[in-house]
Amino acid sequence: MSVSTAAAAAPDRATDVGVIDSDVHPNFEAGIRDLIPYMTDTWRQRMGFGQEGWETSFAASAFHLPLNYLHVNTAGAFRKDAAFEGKPPASDARHTARDLFDRHDISRGLLIAGQMFGIGAMPQAEVAATLASAYNEWMDERWLQVDDRYRGALIIAPQDPDLAVAEIERMAGRDAIAAIFMPLHEILWGEKHYHPIFEAAQRHELPVVTHPSGTESIFARAPKMAGTPTFYIEWHAGLAQIHYSNVLSMLCHGTFERFPGLKVVIAEGGFTWLAELMWKLDRDWQSLRDEVPWIKRPPSEYILDHVWCTTQPFVEPHKKEHVAQVLDMVCADRNLIFSSDYPHWDFDDPQRALAAIDPALRRRIMVEAPLEVYGDRIR
Amino acid sequence: MSRHVIDRAEEIPPGTRRVVDLDGRSIGVFNVEGTFYALRNRCPHHGAPLCEGPVSGTMLPSDPDEYRFSTAREHQIIRCPWHGYEFRLDDGRGLVKPETSRVKAYRVEVEAGDVVVYTR
Ligand code: FES
Image (cartoon, rainbow over all chains, first blue to last red; front, side, top):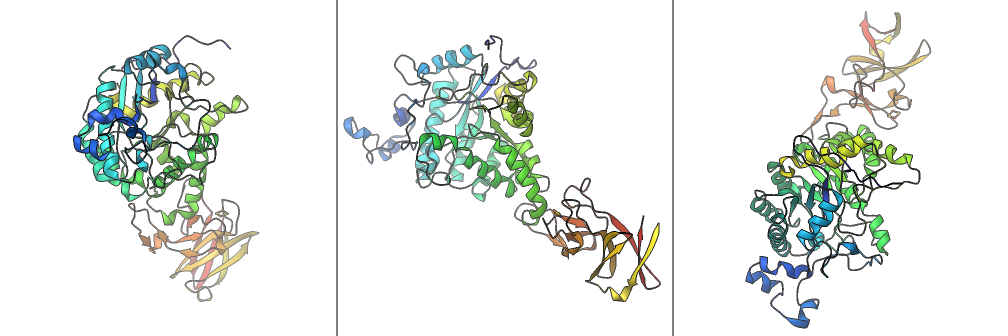
């Protein structure tokens, strides 16, 4: 197959915005310690960052970010070619802009969480919220102000809705903020716990984005899978479980009746499961609706109006023709937006990964639908 | 239009029903608080004997975390004994998807003390 050098999708005429990438990860050079300049002295002490030398790497002397430390990706979790001048992949905003935007002809990239995916598993909400604020400042200064193709998802600590809302109020008005990133937590998303967060998101017209946390079933307050996977491959291939449960929880609790302006983006959580969920729930609703009478329309309609999944890692069915079929089943023209997951190992190239699908649909997924999701903030 | 006398009205008192065979079709005749209804005894979903299901009021659409159950006449439904789909007794429409999911409802009258069902 010859590789097309033309753009993966033509830009939107009115805005001149081309391919929008909904999942880009800016990385730290020295882990959590990159955030030290962005917190108060008191918090530096509280987090154990006052020390030097060997103590800095010992557990119980300083905080570490909760991530998947119990499974090893032997292929390497990052694109090795994305490393730059000896620094970790995607830790330099200028190099990343060249390597992602220029090289792959991407016009906007939504920055999600760096290595902060797992803060929803931390036992003290104030610690997670302080890290969230520090990350947001770091992302603003080190990325958003460096290249105007970056957009940021402001991160919040999901453990404490009051602190989360305060952070949304603090950051929502900044230039280049286009979404809220809510890390996964042990509480499912339909529950009352999240109402203040969704209210603030709706008020600021910011989509709420989530992503695998890297802590699933590893830490006690992390989101739960059905048991703890033994292997990285088992963990990675099963990540949709939690998103399936969260979407189900929101639908059954009437979250989108309560917050009719709420938009939810699930990054890197797969998407073919939407078909099963829509069909199953639409059928069950006919039998069991008196338990949840606030579901006023076929449940699938709420998904079509409020939930988007990102494409990466894109499906590779055994039969090529199944790609178009499964996209049709999940209503990909309504529910799917493009993501590359740069600089992770399972990156999708916009020219290659979706090359086999109908060009009009590809344009919808890469340009039009994300423009609708993020609105003016992505223009 | 064929006219079928089912029985004397007092033989089908409120809260009871009679399933009868009319022109080879199984039809359920219901007395709900003095009002008579007649429905085809076949669920449009998978063909269950619909008229053997329970008759009741229904849960109304409501705001999240609120329940409003109504027994008003217009909310009287029959619930299919198989998968629980609900159909209005008066016009046979499904509460969910009323445009596409519907069971045939027949005209019923009480004429000189007789319960009369009109088919086609
Ligand atoms: S057969 Fe009546 S609901 Fe399925």
